[in-house]
Length: 470
Image (cartoon, rainbow, N blue to C red):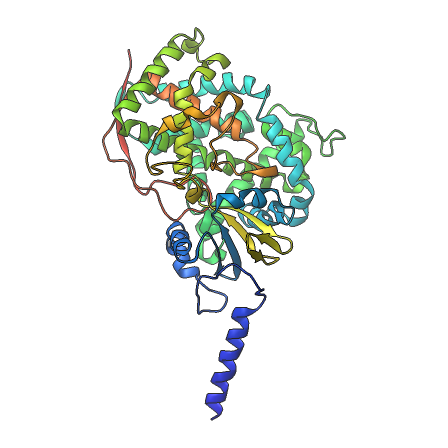
């Protein structure tokens, strides 16, 4: 009898736990039977597939318990306005634990500087600032591509990373950030690649299980600590009276508006943000183009016509007029971003949030999935097809996107570097196809279903054959 009574008590306590904090009119829950852990195992196996399964079973709005986190997914585009605009759906509190885990930024520092950092970086990577950036970046991209040689075979992802990583680090962080010799540059880059590969696990699991990731994180922070110290030795003010002051590089600008103690940690976040999305997005753009002969020919012809007509391209420069003329390539970039966008963006409910007939409880993480939004046939007919022409109806010169496209987030805290990123990717693709004849050797790999943060990565390597144009 005692054993039976104990069992009944345990069952009652468990049922109370399952219903703890639940409210009337909550979104439906994906069933789980394990306290705290919830659906973590099934969710972690393939998050994007899990979201698809839950949405099919429960509808466009549903809640999930994963390792103690109560998450509500919002997949109906009609709800995006509330998601991005409601003061109850807070971005800063949602990402603060993530930034602390990912880069060691303290909670107090993030609360104090987050908005200023966002606005400062946005200003530095848009408008007139892009003019100086464009010329420097074009020269660097062209030089790095020519270092590939006359022709042969290469791993597409590694080659694009080699071109973009060095070029963007030098531009955003300054010449002194990278080591002086090629071997040490490669070591620095490989450390970041390992950090990026295990990023999602590293930000969720105890360091005991991700010790290599933690080691890479420590190495990168130590490196940026040295870089920041050098900046202050050169005369950068520890407490600039003008918080809007602009340094020569984005890193100097960033360091100028945050506390010195956390500056190296913010630098690591800037490194990840500038590399983790753009590099795989360019990989997918090039791979998708090469997979379709008609699109491939159109891209090559546009690159030849525009860049050969630009008198400065032979010396490495690329005019603003040329960038504007690369319209089809821009459409290819945006279409690749649509197909391989991050699995989720996140907010946190500061109080009960009404959505349709549901009330999302305070404290829930509210998840919006660009991956599934971009597969909504109401906005994107034949959604799995790589179709750059679907962007014909958008006024690209006004920096507009298709309805339903949330590849750069939305609301107050959209990606602050989105215009830089689009320009950067557009330039890399145009220069690559202008300089080389390109041909796929391997089939285009499938994307990994594991990624919820950052652009999806390819599951396998993809080799191509290249030959320098005469």
